[in-house]
Length: 450
Image (cartoon, rainbow, N blue to C red; front, side, top):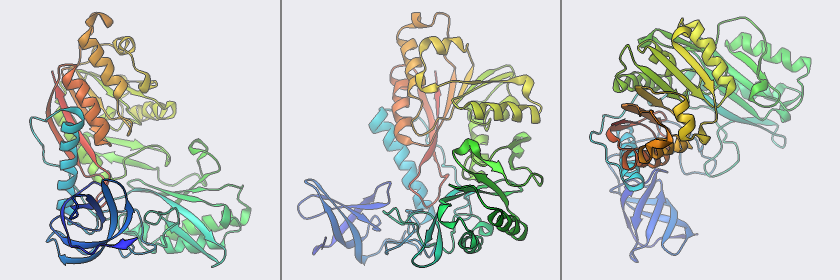
């Protein structure tokens, strides 16, 4: 590594929150910790033929968008937490970066330009994270336990005493949890604690590699009684999770706008940010503009996060999901909410979609697509294939409107390219969704009409 001798002017910022500059030779320099408009020096750690990468060491001119990070564990220092990337950038500017990422990906990867850019969906920037997976490590040499996210660019567990992106009540549990684990006989065989918060419950899932002795179980019960948490035990994979003690309030979240309540297990997929999820469901349904006689398909439906609100507005909703466990949860939630008569759920591998399978699901007026990071390529390709050759699905007609909720702008852009350039859709609107403030994670929503 070596220190740059020249001052570098930072021109932009990329998604991993690295400032982008050019040195005197015209080579691109990525600088950790630098912001657009700043004039800086950097410690170069990697050199390639056409780019270099380094870390901010000195600022000559500071950006007006630079702010003091809200968490003491954020930064470029040794041992810094790697959970957040952008705490040094003003919150509104973070959202602007993400909106630009969505727009750039759609154009450069999909050759798609939305007719309208909607206002990004934003919410609280601190205490928003109701789900988190904390690593646990017993450091025998020091006789102490670490609980937290990994260090920046490292597999070591950060020495976190607080966490500002989880609710304060959870942040305040970090040090008591460290003391609890340190007191347990199995402390060196407890690799993970997963947080899952509902409207009334703080659930903690303890991953344990060995059966827990009675003494450790007693310690967990005492901790639960003192701190008001609910323990779940996970001896193996996510499907082995089991509530330590029955009774107490149920883990669930509500979508009040639609009068829906969603019970879930702590290892089920639910959105990390309940404030944004509620706003996102509301916007998605307004954009979809479901009519009371419509049939709707919710692809990648999960436990019914969009399906059940849709069922309050549509004649019929078909939810399709790859996980049989989530499909079962969807069916149960439909019954709980009195919507079983308007919903139908199917488990299927959506990464192997074909025109024939698509036609077999029947014609729907509107679609909601909410895939994982891999996107919905097979689904979009099947639609495009039918558009190019209608004989592949005689009598089938495409939905008039699609709302696509994405957690990966690159796969959204790829799928949008198929829908727009081959299937005859227009991308009428798109926007970023700031589900994870201070991080590089970009969610988005896009509307397609034909």
